Length: 487
Ligand code: NAD
Image 1 (cartoon, helix red, strand yellow):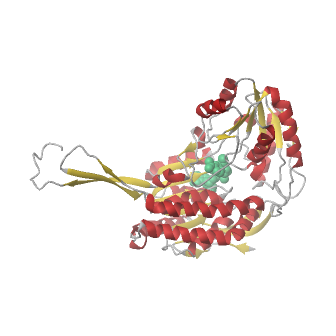
Image 2 (cartoon, protein in one colour; image 1 turned 180 degrees about the vertical axis):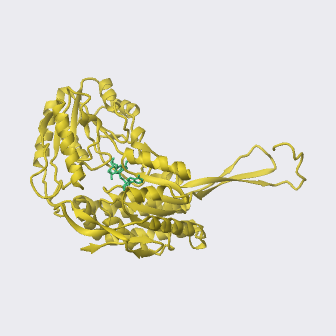
Image 3 (cartoon, helix red, strand yellow; image 1 turned 135 degrees about the vertical axis):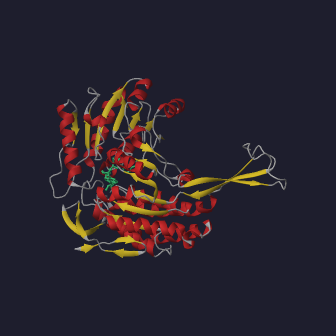
């Protein structure tokens, strides 16, 4: 079986122990991954801390850091087919999407390469005539980055890119469910010419994540994953007082008004919930549809859902591949069964596909009469859509906001004034109007409430990896007046 290695201080290392990585399309182990030990975690953080303070990295100009990131972006673009193949093999995400997404990951690094020398300080118009005061923006220090299995190359790019642009160093823990793409990414990173220790990549489970996030030399934890894990991380940050950015789950409303372009809304809803087999934090998993068009909309949606091509993820024709793990498949199965027992009406799907691997079909549950159904409150992280209907705009807003999550939302209407009212009223970090699941390195991304805090993407993300230093310079040659009075 193929073996992968951890990347610590510019060297590739075996683990003391290994674990199998399973191909979700077959359920069969295909590669062995090194479980990082506590000592590996410590060595990686110490290496990142040394690099952070070394002239080789700290002494580089921001422009030079940008050039290194640019070189990395070129290497990612060159190696995109191999990275896509590995991500598909290890996670089951379809090759159609991994190919497109990884090519775009290179653009994320390019964006942050360009931003490196645009992270500016400020000069302050201070209220004292004999002082010059300015703010320096300095990197926060060593960053612990933790990612889940879905879209790891993408979710790590929005951490590594801004962190390195700002001058930080990083220890990244890949998901134990599918670490191959990140461990291969480390090999590509190694060719870009960064000093040793600037990026370290480890894998392993919760114990590795816990050891990393509570390490005394960690200054910031950038986490993507579930709310329960986020609570552990926040507790750990009580040890080192690291700042945190948390990109968590969602139960995003997809709202369709009767005046919407229905063909377009149906396609967007299919993409919003069935793409990536629903394993997307921004999945539009609650369809909130106006009663007057509900039957027509659901009929069109059902037809599309049943026509979806389910198949091997490495086949370009496949539209829905397997879920990443057997636990994910079983969880989706249980949640659907529970919701049906609570009164939800199963419109299509609902049971695992009868083939090897962890396949679950596009599933639609009508929960219109049971607003407290589990399927409306729990994140499936699978291709399961729960439907609720509304009559008035106010009702739509109240259903949309009836969640502790607040990551994404979609509004489909041709009415411009209504669109603006909805944009103002929805509590979520992203509102897509007449589109869904669009992303860009230029646009910040993140949520409210149980969906976390902090933003990834855009200039703000790079600033979040910096802290300010206030500098005071006295310009008078006169002796300092009364030393007992604060000036
Ligand atoms: P998870 O929280 O179980 O695991 C995520 C990562 O955290 C893994 O690498 C895991 O090993 C690590 N981890 C587990 N316990 C830890 C601990 N005690 N300390 C430190 N690290 C620990 O999440 P998952 O089930 O792998 O991924 C699915 C979740 O991720 C969903 O809730 C999904 O919505 C969320 N997600 C959010 C975004 C976003 O950008 N908002 C994107 C993708 C996924």
